[in-house]
Length: 208
Ligand SMILES: Nc1ncnc2c1ncn2[C@@H]1O[C@H](COP(=O)(O)OP(=O)(O)O)[C@@H](O)[C@H]1O
Ligand SMILES: [Mg+2]
Image (cartoon, rainbow, N blue to C red; front, side, top):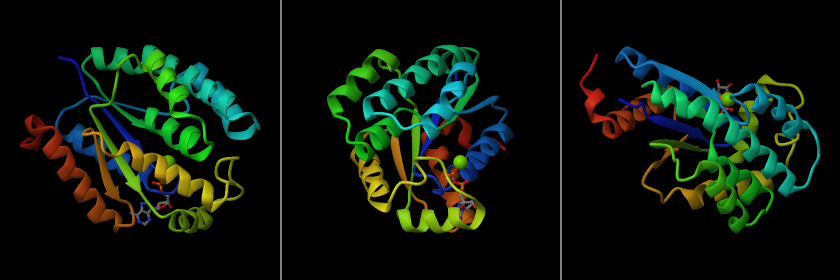
């Protein structure tokens, strides 16, 4: 039996890493083998591209081409093989992030992104996407507590993250996408995430 593919989306500071732990734990308690991964990254090639993407200035099209180059490697080398082995794949960001960041944030056309998606993903989509929606000001406050200088995305202004947020919003009509209010207290948010998992995967809901 092939596994399921779950993606977590949202701007930095939205709480993806925190709730990835929730999803992973919920699945592992039910005996599911989990492959946790991320974008940009997830393979040797894509992880090598990641610092270029995060630190080197480049045109929006170059940025998108590099993201999708890494994604092609990620899909073919990691995600599809894991699903075929029956593992469940949890990815910290996937294709929706390109529509949000390269589309909304950088202004790259939907036509270009859809073409790249068709080539690279070839109809392959997540089974479930949790979009952690958060006001960019709150995200910035959370990040300011923990860190030094961010990468070239994190250094963008509020207006950039508003456009990224709108890019995610524009994708949220798809039935696989579930918007989570990321300003919610982390423990309550974790319960909400578990409820979404129960509804999305009823065959696992009763376990443990
Ligand atoms: N629901 C939440 N409410 C308040 N703070 C949160 C919440 N979720 C995560 N945080 C905190 O915000 C920061 C960013 O969370 P993180 O999970 O790393 O976000 P992301 O992976 O989306 O960048 C961390 O310091 C984390 O402890
Ligand atoms: Mg994170």
